[in-house]
Length: 553
Image (spheres, rainbow, N blue to C red):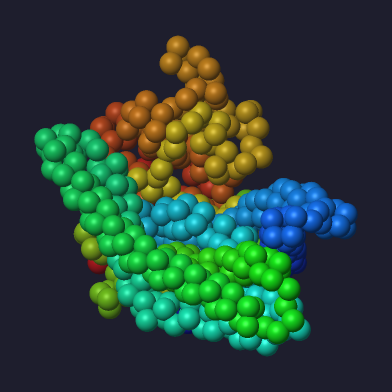
């Protein structure tokens, strides 16, 4: 059974629970932002009043006004530094929290049986989308909340000076909202198109990079460049339309702010008993108060990119679980190799196409069993089911000890299962970096001696001039410095580093020459007995070394 988390209607709100540890920091950022803007308003009001008093009456302001102005400058400087410091700190923690949740979703749901999974989309989500959201949650949310609180406080503060002033401010806010609401849908559509186009560029770039050799081999470099250019131009065209729309919306908001200032000025001069020397201060205070409000309204009109990013991140976090529900977990720490009991195992893809028909299989502890069959019989599907990368639609897989103790494979906790059962596929990845870096992907705590032992066991001793740096030898991106046979044995050694009780090999010799195949087969034969080995292959020469063979299809 697959478990899928329910995706909230508002994706921005849907990610909030994943940042529960940072809520206090976000609230404090909002408080600091409010105090910072308040200090700016005080500075604007005090400065305007002092200048107006000097110009209109040729009088110096009282000492307390100068003290208030200097205090506002110092206070604002300290708050600005503190706000930047905490917002960046919280942003990094939010980035980490979202990426941990995202990678947990990837680990739970990838590899998926769904055909729409794409490395480029996942990479764009993990990097671009999450980085865009970190600042939104760490700063923009606090800014919006702070602007709202400050505006309400400002309206309340000018009420004693005259209700007309408060009404003018409220009407200004209503005008800002009125010119913003009609364009929200248009802005959302344009923003969605830009995000979709950018996602398309990411997908295409990953595909082109992955197929570099084929592109060069077929002489398609200009065609690939043209495709990438066309996709980039689509992004640029969409961004220009969005920028034009946002510029028009910004102009309308500026008119609203100007109209509000005029309304406040008119209300002020109409207020009986209000000293005219306060008019410049009221205008300056109104402008300073409305600036973050107008900026907040502008932010609301530009939320679509963030909503789209949050949607993709939420979908990644909520990927269908590859965990089968089978009751409580049990302890299973049997010594020596393990056997397998497979009963009526079946699997279909999401489109309903059968990938593995009802299959039963018994493998004794320490046995070396070969799995063969025609293309489409489900050999690779069976391999992925045996190592719990996919969940069967029906049937069962049990681990069996030498003493006969049996336990359902999904009743063993994830960490324990991964230490006992592992898979080496034909296209197992080799990453840029040293031998030690790559080997430690399987066992992060593996020592140099452990690595060398596993490599020797796999028939790949680091001897000769090319391995002069030993485990620190850099093997290049995708193992470019390794031959096909060396790459296969390297991936085998990486699997052996965790000392698995069951090792599943899926077409690991498929692309090897006879000499390389023979070396790998001999290395596998040497570990059979101490480790249960299941070899999936279409090659007779590979299967010949197995104790027995099972035919699928």
